[in-house]
Length: 63
Image 1: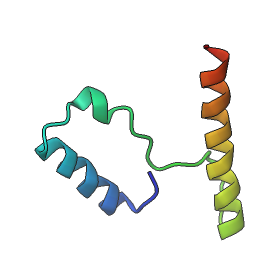
Image 2: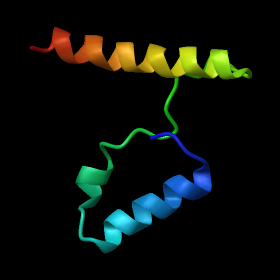
Image 3: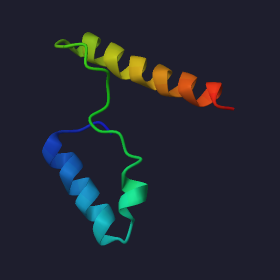
């Protein structure tokens, strides 16, 4: 998920209140992006896309 720590906490709390299990919430990824010490918007975008590619490749290798 993209968002500030405060926003992510609020969203997770909302889902918990709606009855989602801790097991289903554990599937959420936040904050998103590989830790490459990104600082600029372009670098942040690259770190996010890198994580998306990594997850996609991991899923395709298990099928």
